Length: 408
Ligand code: FES
Image (cartoon, rainbow, N blue to C red):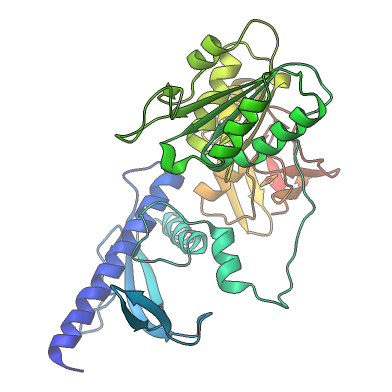
């Protein structure tokens, strides 16, 4: 390999390692909230003399080996037509980078926790592409299905679970609030209600950035035109230059309680929300604070749910008022830790301490995080949706009432 080519590759892989280090640092910051944390830097591990060169108080990421992987779905070069000429594009190149991560931190348990977080970051986002936006994990499930699932693959599946459904026979006015692709389940609810009880008052509030993100536009317009009992409000938070209020959308800005209160009449309403975490985190607590009873509020976050954690935090004063630390033993993980009350749930606490646990919905709906309670008592701010087996608990929505020994 020529010296120029070698220098080019070195530069490219330095950039990749910098990118990966940034990803891990952003991940650790999100998980720990600690900006003073031990940070990862691209670095050699030893110098020519074989002496360690990792800076004190840091994690180092270093390239160990590179493997090229060209066995993708399309074995033949892809043919494309560009400006009238047919070109052949080679299949995309994918590289497996084997990296070594080392910690040089005085406190052994801190080093261990940071290394565990780094590993979790790569589990959470195993594939990186140049088009990635740092800090935004891609759809892990769809990526897994694209890359790893073929005809003949054996999948472990769970039955559908959750309580996010509407009673189509109920007459109570319903308010459906969707953000982005969260419109998908709400559209099904809407159609079912319109079919079964077309006279029921229905309000659909649909928030997106602008028309380029608005799904099902013709279908929704048609439903609104056909059903006088349906009131459709589309909100654009950042309308494009050519988009006009009143023609393309009804409200400029995010969906909020003030808009709902202006638009809805007096009387009881049932609320159904589905959208991205930011929308759920702002709207669910705001609706509760505005006096909507908990039992009239139904929601499902699109992606790992963060609303219940926030709700638990708010309710934590009553759920776990103890200020003294509690000893928590995670049996299978072999860790004994002190609960300091800072976290919304046992799962958040364990992850912050570098204990890797299985989870999915993070909102008490699926049972993935269910584990046996060997000793002690777990409390919940509100009854979880998932039916918990006797002697077990849900880590994602539970908090300790006493010292605990958990099987996880
Ligand atoms: S992760 Fe789904 S119930 Fe805890």
